[in-house]
Length: 69
Image (cartoon, rainbow, N blue to C red; front, top):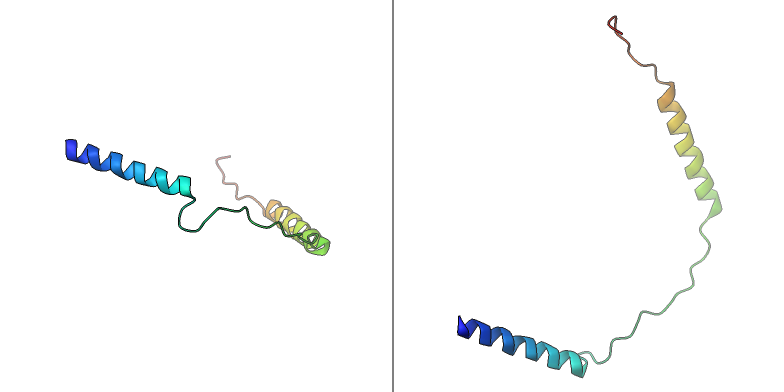
């Protein structure tokens, strides 16, 4: 049990030392911001119309009512 505890302490101190030095790759930089173009408006309109057609079509399917209703 004491050997396991010693290994955990040694491992955590090694990780802390590497983190303080910046690791193997040097300093960590945030990703570069890329300007994205506007989303295509026509595709959003087509998608919205398609979803609306599917919703209306699903509601137009008659329900099967049995004689026990």
